[in-house]
Image 1: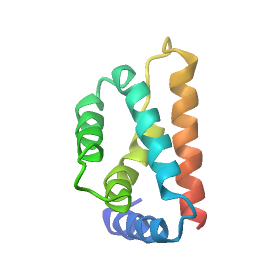
Image 2: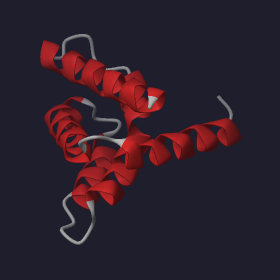
Image 3: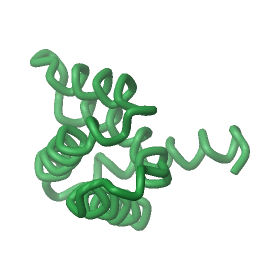
Image 4: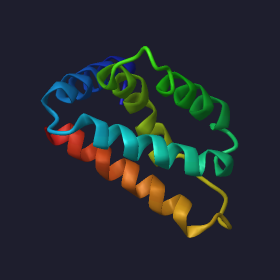
Length: 106
């Protein structure tokens, strides 16, 4: 996917945030999953830490936090982890990917 198409795709996903029934639920899932897997994704740990830090800002709304978090999901979902990671890491990656696909459909 080229940069222009990726930008348009992420813009459409962000716009779908406003139509979510329960955006806090999505935010909680994303936050929990990222926090659980970050130590197993060493090449992305600093990016995930940065997103988690921004998600913890009390002055941000749920929508703003989702706008920060959603763009990292495709990268996390496609990131290759070591073969010997715990099963929950691959489960969390799958859960994030499924969540992203649900957002994409909305």
